Image (cartoon, rainbow, N blue to C red):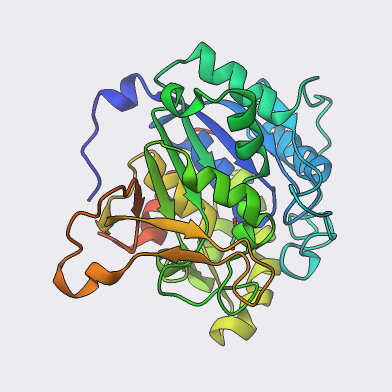
Length: 328
Ligand code: RIB
Ligand code: CA
């Protein structure tokens, strides 16, 4: 089980979320609002599942629905560092990015500045304390590193959903979506000297919500939880061809739960990770140095990234109990 209720729930750390609000991003956002382990102080959006602007719209509407319209939302990069946004993943997340669910339109607008500007501003304001949860392509994070080269010293920890160590990719045979959508940005972020946790497909594809869990959300007394259950209907349809049954991998909410210590990793070696930015069949692949696999992953010189390969408990019960809490 995760660490018992500790000071961090009485005085939760400040978090910045960078997302491409699609359906699992929406679950991660709801989780970060519902958990007492996080103080969500800012959100940036990036093109991925949907455009950065559409992601901001979904985020603002969900924040209002969840009773937190005050959290600043900044629109980030529309295009990846090298290339153009190619329209997102409507077949996975629906045309509007949240499974066709119509949330009431928030009257709140995104803040004036860009997502990288908001991140750098918050990193300076919460120097040494701010934690980043990045669950979309890493374009904004890479831009923030260029804007403030001291960013890694200002950030307590960055948790990234992305990549694949031993698991296959989900966009190509070897590349995961967030990294494949901007390999150059991912390479820049992985090369920076910060306290990083990577949550790859190896662990997210084994953290699966089943139809019974979705029915529990649909039956919830909380309207936010019910809306998430409706969104998952579309997402489950995509995963039938992946898993052979209606269910869904909880990529982003798992990364959020690991970032706030709501779920503890079981196996998480600190290893060297590079990103393939060539234009060959490996483009976007995370090249993880797993050669310690057979001897318990001894320390690797120069390694900085903790790669979560498994967690210590089943994720769905923790996710559902957090989303059913009276925090919306
Ligand atoms: O590969 C899964 C990741 O890509 C998740 O963050 C999902 O929301 C998409 O952004
Ligand atoms: Ca995402």
